[in-house]
Image (tube, rainbow, N blue to C red; front, side, top):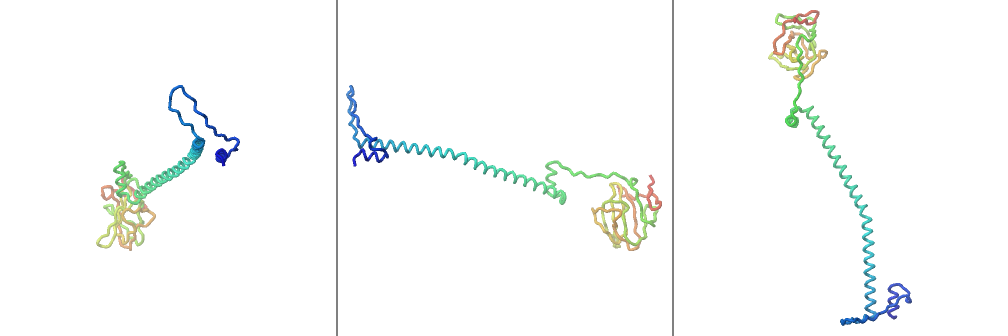
Length: 251
């Protein structure tokens, strides 16, 4: 096989369209070292090298364009991933805030003097607002048990077997038990008006409990029980009378 046919087969061309020629170098008026003419093998090698180089460059360019086309997809996927992470972070933050709020509410309700509540009050200057009830005894309409006897010192005596009631709604300020086994209950109706029930055989409520005038607060087995009214200085109030079981204040 001649060189022309071999080269044509390598390039997949018709043998008639593939011609390799070697031109003779032109003579120069300047005396230079004359280059040796290239033979057909050298020319063929250079042509093949050039074609391979151009093919390789074209392949690199095509690969580069393919990579460029894929970049936006990769960026979008990354952005979506970051978006999910951001939403998760926001969700965690909201959950933490809600949990902290519930903790504060529960501790305020169940443990008002807990360390966390004391801390928040000290940091934010939150002070407990205590409602002050300035009503005096003359602001209350009081009825006493039927058959109650009023003594000169303002103490009422009741001879009764059964349940005992408070004369007005209030809060149990204290409960004490004497050496005789009888109970005395001090009930706060306002900051300036209290009721003391003494001689009870049983007390149904403890300090801090809410009491109501239609709910029994204790029990008597039939021996004498006493009832008296006190002001904010724990002084027994004696300037009143009883008319049809109703207290009439002398004001």
